[in-house]
Image (tube, rainbow over all chains, first blue to last red):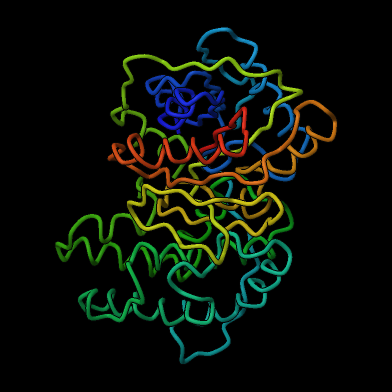
Length: 226
Length: 148
């Protein structure tokens, strides 16, 4: 981001760069940088709060008044203490013959469709795996957990992109199941720790790591602190 | 898992150093055409998805609000964007500011890059200057840069 700021300014375009990680925006030193201590993925702070977003923008635009490079810190921080997890009502077991994660994903489909109808498909399935094929992707990861080498398991794409689609499918469905806008990472924690599909993804990731597969193949299947 | 844990992982990434800090004096904000450039790998559904080490950019149209998050990194929260595109791409807020006369106007087209880059030479030498040229051809005066 800051690299682009330097390039654009050199070409005669004034810039203001928002940054979420203080050390990064300090070290990359864009000509006008505003560090906003907000969760990663939410550079304007609060979804659905135009007033909050306008205050961030107003502070950003104030940096244009400086006659020289400037770095500033936004005076409101939004912290994530890892405590909030979405509490979503999960569908009851429907098909006892299906893997629990597959049954779960099928059960979440109506919620997924409601969320898509309300918000559009902004982060859901579709990068590597369409919604209709999510259960097939989960089944492929189940095979990895059971010992099948990942290249032979029928994973329908690069594992990290496939797991991203599964996570996106679940977190999108969660938007329709939750009674409030979730805080940052609440949906991810719910998916990884409280859903059958999340457990399958994490187990497949671990199986690939244990099998000695190259790190980039499995590492990016989940956030890097996992 | 907490946001601070993820930030700590990337806090010490080596930064690109520029010999000098380029600096452009802006036109008055109330006369400026403003564009958004994001590193969130956004694109329209029918546009080419970003590849893992994609150093190019995609053009985002103001009038179409069907932006899709194409980022490869798992290390950020995407639900904020899913709930409200303005959390990452504050196009509605800019249009409100233009209506109020705070900014001059909003560009019809904006840019998205992929922020998960470790090798930046292609952006420095190629797609970055090309993006600047694209924006200048639209008479953009000010760019707001947003990450994820």
